Each structure stands twice: as C-alpha cells, then as structure tokens.
Length: 111
Image 1 (cartoon, one colour):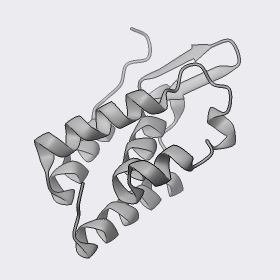
Image 2 (cartoon, helix red, strand yellow):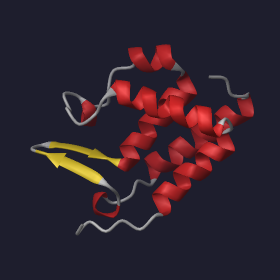
Image 3 (spheres, rainbow, N blue to C red):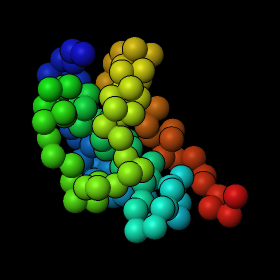
C-alpha cells in the first residue's frame, strides 16, 4: 500500500479526530463478551493504523490496553478489512468518506 505524504497526513488527522472524539458505545455497533468490548470506532482506528504505518509496523505494534487479551479483536481481521478497503477505495479521501458515513449512521442499540 502506498499513499502520498498528503494522503498520509489526511489519514493521520482523521485518525486523531476519532481518537479525540469517539462515539458513545451505545451510539455505535459493538459487542460485549464478559469484560471484553469491541466497537466500530476501535475497528476504524485499527484499520487506519494499519493503512498509515504499514503491515510490518502494525504486526510489531503491541495492542493498546483495551485490546490486550481481547478475543473480540483480531489483527488478521483488521489486515483483511484494511486490504479490502484499500483495493476498493485507493485514495485517502475515499477512505475517510467511507469512515465518515459509517460513523454518521444512526445506530439503534435496541436491535
């Protein structure tokens, strides 16, 4: 995967926006299993980290505390998701637009 410096900066800025202003868990798709949680914003964050820093760096990066020993998270699934998004979107602007659409969708936690 190759992005221009401008595209990498866009992706990094968008990643930081999500980190700075995450959605409430109740306002996004999520799964709880005992003490473990997996949510859509965390998936987007992990996909962006993979796309920005590359496969080798992502594989070597230790998981954040929220994901340590979390059976709901899979590096292999993040890699597969990121690769598919890269193939279909190609540009940072397209990727960001897809993530914005995902994050703007209304989520009904009662279903």
